[in-house]
Amino acid sequence: MRKALFIFFLFISANSFSQHYGMLWTEIGAEGKIIKRLKWNADINTRFDLTGVRTFFPQAGVSYKITKWLKGSVEYRFILDKNRYGNFKSSNRLNFNLAFKENKKRFYYGLRLRYQYAFNRISADAYDADFDQAFRIKPAFEYDIDNSIFTPVVSAEFFYNPAFGPTSPGFSKMRLAAGAKLELDGPHSVSFKYQLDKRFRDFERDLRHVISLSYGFKF
Image (cartoon, rainbow, N blue to C red; front, side, top):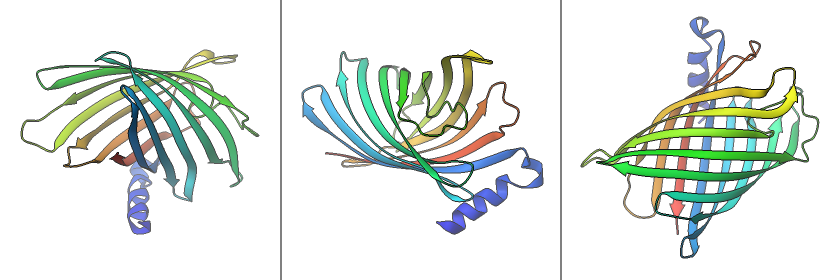
């Protein structure tokens, strides 16, 4: 694991990528049915950078299938995030989501709307779209390849900061991602993606490259 991280960060920190930096995100989760249309989910997320663990957060929530193409969900996160001094600070967050998804001839398109509300955050250095209040808009597209275990996925996500400040309210960050889901037999699921993050109007923050790996188990 450490060798893989070292090679990954050595590659993206080469001279030709001097204004870029990278992270590795991992997610392990599970979900199950409570009653018809109502499900629970729980997962553990860990984000690594060159110094080791940068952010760690367990998360749990419930989702309800409103219609065939619309689902609502609520999630709670307890976040431990490393600050500039190398100390982990805690915060709490609630996510309120609406997810739309439709398909046509093996082509799936969807849109997730999220409002995230952070509370009890300690010693915030500056606004961070990942952890503070934000509205998020995430369109995504999938294609179910016939006779293949791979389902390619591409997405974009836009973060809107509603707080009043020198550069807000307004859109503060965007993400672009491409990856795939693996259609495995049984209750297991695996996915991976490559993601680019960039903040708007913040030239001190470099472009972030992310490799994300996820595993899920369905009860």
